[in-house]
Image 1 (cartoon, rainbow, N blue to C red):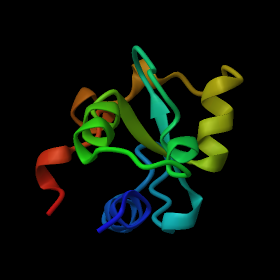
Image 2 (tube, rainbow, N blue to C red):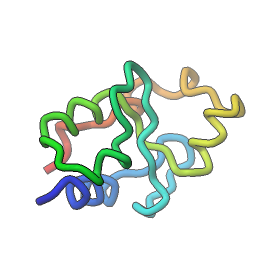
Image 3 (tube, rainbow, N blue to C red):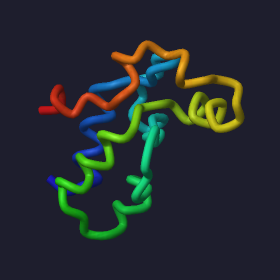
Length: 93
């Protein structure tokens, strides 16, 4: 499975942590800490799955609308239940 398929499969099993949107094409990874690279931009290049998982561990999943609202200060991620924030790599099979 290539990186693009891997991320699509992950997104298809999860939803936005704010509003619950679950359509995979609407979901984006929001970095919470130490962004090394953008997951979507890196898909254009060969990338090791370990690098993808390491970067995903720094993210939460948001729909495009909520992602923009977070970046514009309308939503505050700090108000979200801590158990929902980080991407759950362990539940990805």
